[in-house]
Length: 618
Ligand code: PEP
Ligand code: NA
Ligand code: MN
Image 1 (spheres, rainbow, N blue to C red):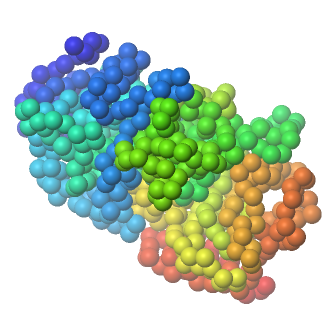
Image 2 (image 1 turned 90 degrees about the vertical axis):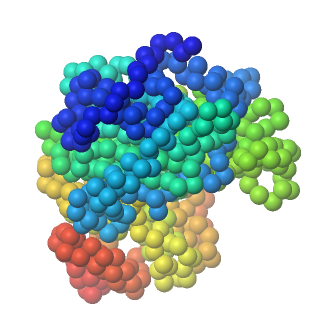
Image 3 (image 1 turned 30 degrees about the horizontal axis):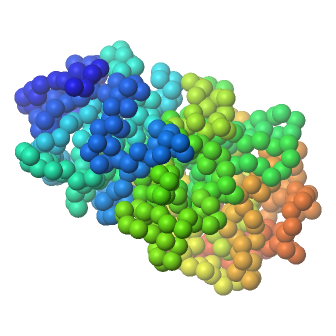
């Protein structure tokens, strides 16, 4: 009784699957591919998704009837739903994420690698009959505006209706994509199964999944195979698997970049706009910065994206970028009126929540949404909860899935088909020591060095000592689809393709530096606009800087702290450059770089040597 969908009969699998990108062109090739996946996974039926509101309404109704979604009280949260996952399927599984390239060194030392043939043989067994008793949905999608210059197409087949709904929010999904495929546009092939076939008459569970998981990328043939998980990062294959892992490898071949970056438009009091891309490791406040409300009068931030940016040099010598996604898959806890009021407004309705807590009035709650928790909740596992329960009510990685268009602060150019020109690139980590609030790279090569050395402190360090560092180069550690050192070389090559006077300026930022008393020196959130103000001033050629051994620092007396009540010498501490601890930092960087052997670009070894030279002279 499903309207607007065509059902295809299973066909016999072709003798040899088409596994080159060029064989996957046109609708006939797509149909043959779908038939082959169906022949392998044996679903009861195949449904082609059209991306209409009628379709998502049918799916939500069906999932509510099956007990897989809870409809929230429409009075508080119209057309919104709560999903509770299996307690063991709540996050990405990096240990089960594989990059399968012919040569191991092409995956590099930071990825799990298995040879493509061996992995294909294993997956053939894993996926055989994995969709029995279920529906296989065919989900055509575009990353980026349909037909846009920087956009790319994909198709996901999945046996999860929750994944279909979420993909409908996170991408431009549906029949219009098939027109582009028919016209011969290439597409990335992605296969997803929760790995929980149903025997005839067997009752389904609320969140089917499998304890054994595979998140497999084949960059050479532009395919993703994901098994065993229904969770976002593992199951919405357009996002991390395609738009970062596969797309990064595509970009390397084709001269562009797929990066783990937010994208914003900053407007100064004179009405001049700047587009800024920023890479931060997970859990460093990317979504908050993407939706910032500046504390500084006259400044405005508008949102283009909160997680992924695709960047390409234009004929004009500038770097152009898009957010390839159409929605936000954000962490709920810590999102509240005082930290991210824009996100709270965005979530007024039409939202899928996963693993947050349920209020007695049929609305949702999570830690940080309000200062005072409700007196009673049903927690993310479906159990009664009170503030004295001694455990979080929402899972710490609970999520919201919502259309970007619903964000009241989206920039007017967020869907520009050619993208927007990038004026500045920021790299941030979570550093208690050493790294100043903001420092400007002296040139593109120095900026690439800063991106390559992004790190967060694992342990609280004592003053003058750098703590143990967790490295997350370009915030791409779990997401780079090829050798990380080659990624750095590719960034250097992209710099060569830009006009030196039109390339984005690059900056390192750190909201998390602590004083000798162990307290944060900087209030963060809306006050981070003061850092953006200096960055815009640098781009406009209006803000001064002082040279230091680690790059260009703001002139402390000129840095805008009007109306901000900072502790005595907080600014001096925020911008302090301690020679001894930067020597330690250089030693740690050398050790980190040595893990990449001869793949390390010579330019980065030169940058490190230059830093040591400046330290020796200091
Ligand atoms: C995810 O885990 O699905 C995800 C979007 O990752 P993160 O928020 O860590 O970037
Ligand atoms: Na995650
Ligand atoms: Mn992310």
